[in-house]
Amino acid sequence: MRTRAALLLSGLALAIPAHAQKQVVRPPIAVYWMSVDTMNGIGAGMGGGMNVSSMMGAMMGGGGDSATRTMHLELGSSQSASGEPRAEHDIPAGLNMGPSLPLNTPKRAAPSRDEDMPPGMEKPKGRMKIYWGCGDKVGPGQPVVIDFAKVAAGQRPPNMVSRRVAGASGPSTGRNRTYGDWPNSEDAKAVPAGASLRGDHLVKGNYSPEIKFAIGERHDFMAPVSFSPLTKTSTGGMQVQWKVVPSATGYFATAMGAVEGTEDIVMWSSSEVQEMGGALMGFVPPAEVARLIREKVVMPPQTTECTVPGQVVKEMGNGFLRFVAYGDELNLVHPPRPQDPKQPWEQVWAVKVRVKSSSGTLLAEGMGGSGGDAGERAESRPTQAPSDSATQTQPAGTPVEQGVQEGLKALKGLFGR
Image (cartoon, rainbow, N blue to C red; front, side):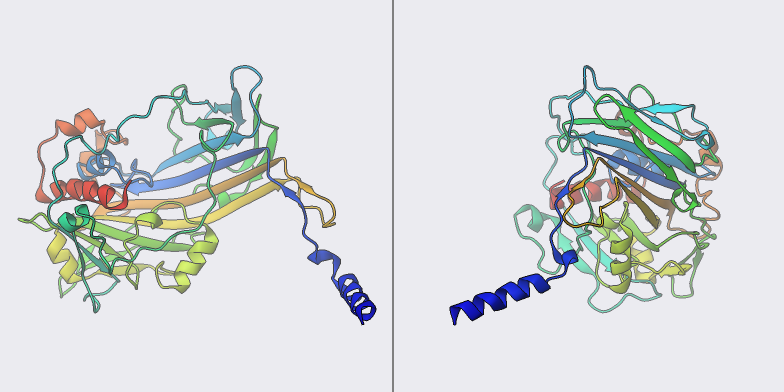
């Protein structure tokens, strides 16, 4: 009996196809990420992050009439440098930024306090009212209300929903033995208008193998988001319309403002289901965008309009609207995976190029209009946000501006970042 069982098991083992055998995969020596954004409207210069300085700079009229193109280049390696770390990225002529960009290794500095969270901050006051969904009227179960004082006391709101977005972790000083990036203290020049990534690229250094790859049209800078002038509906809602962004995989919008005369913050997102949307304003992988479209969180790429409900507009006044068009990703690994599963996949390098297009405008009638939201105010202003010291010398501003600042502080306390 035992002999027959052994023969049967042996037969089953022989029947397992070769492709079912687990292939040994060794991670790449070097990983290179390019994060590419086309920013338009008041939000130009803000980037994907949410900090007080950049938000207030935008609210005060930062940005310009033409789109700003930005890149963040990051090289991480498991190898140590031979001497002082040196690396550079040889770029195509279409970028019009010279032959190469230096990838500098940052000097390690002692941890410092978060500049966006002043010391001695008072106990948070007020509430955050969360709305979601496009349409003239808000849906059932809205708003979800978060009391900041209760949160500070350790009471997490039981009905707060925000989705996790899956994605790989990029190079960093803590994740890699050696790291370099651009822009940096040596070179932080602006990307010229009309610059293109298309063509051959070469990354080289004394702590990384040579990385050769090419970028085509689909992974070049995306077209800027172009809004039509915002219009008010008969019920007080704000109709937001935009042109289709070629190569976009989906869209997401969020708005934030303060209830005048109170310490309440109002947040809204374009999601059909409850979603705060903080994690969705950055780069989101295409597979995650597709999932979020199925879950009715992200708008499909053929969408061209969304109405912010009248109740939301009434409460937040001239809030700040942020909009993102997600783009495709280019993912390359060298050498390619061997077809023979018995042969280990010894990866030498991996490249990720991720792209998006983003914009921002005040949520007020007549704003928008091809991304030139700042109008004449922006013509004499720099595109970057003001420094913290400059921000601190600004007038107190409107209740909306004050509310945005206080709301961001409360959010950082709420989520621990």
